[in-house]
Length: 116
Image (spheres, one colour):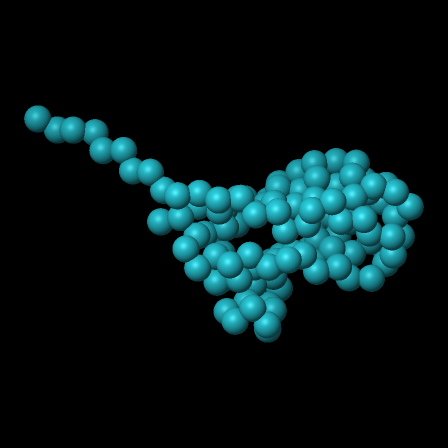
């Protein structure tokens, strides 16, 4: 007789941008996530800014030297979206930049992590 086996993996969520009020055209770095026990699976973005924001996911092996992962992607003003990731680095973060300085709103982003 065979039995079904259910495997459960630990999961976590990290807010890497938490209501970031961007008001310029400079590059803004999110906090970095320590992924030593997890794999980044999904990046959720809530762009409450009144301008489009360009994001770049970055990874690091030592939390000090950062490497861009894939291409930048734009998130239109006042929209929510997500990206998936199959790339693993021990540390990851996002950079955000606006080509036009936002006058209002905030940016939030979360890393959805899965252990195992």
